[in-house]
Length: 254
Image 1 (cartoon, rainbow, N blue to C red):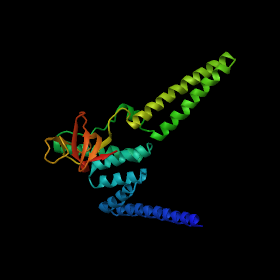
Image 2: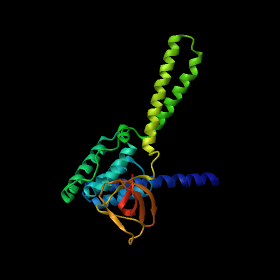
Image 3: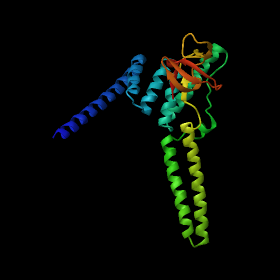
Image 4: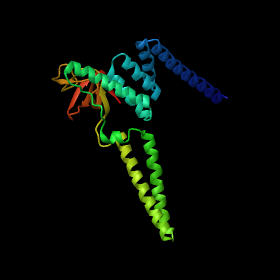
């Protein structure tokens, strides 16, 4: 009886939690629709802080940041939305628009745009597939390649043997391609995690201290690698492969 009661309590608590999160999402949408973008930002941010990693929440958060003119954050969350749902054309258009708008603003202020619109080749090739889809593709094609190879010795007809061999080679090549995609998504061989500078003129220092030597500034939207967070600061790897520190609030993980 006690176990049943506990299960019922947990079930009702989980449902209440889900309903409250749905209410937060609805309030965020309503605030955005009436043009209260600060309120919408608060609601959508509460969802991500609660651990919700959903493409619709990321898309709405990106749109809200864009409406507030915070294009670095908009780019960040459009990219996150596409990581979760690579086929979302609206998120892809939003990402392009955010990059273009930020680039235009930087060009007016600096005389040049800093934001890079073209991703690396490997990222571009696999951009329409999620990490899960590539992992499943790797698993299925690898098993098919192995299965055809195992069936090869039992085949007595030369034409069948040839077909099995060609099929095994084809699935092996597909498995290798999927493995490359999984590696690209997981950033194999690269230090830290993908991140983005989310504030214009982020100060770069030699150490995690306001008194550390100032090395320069990074522009909003610049891609970096996040190595670690150390108190108020984040240790990063800049595009020039230089290790440095910026305020933790100036960088966001992708």
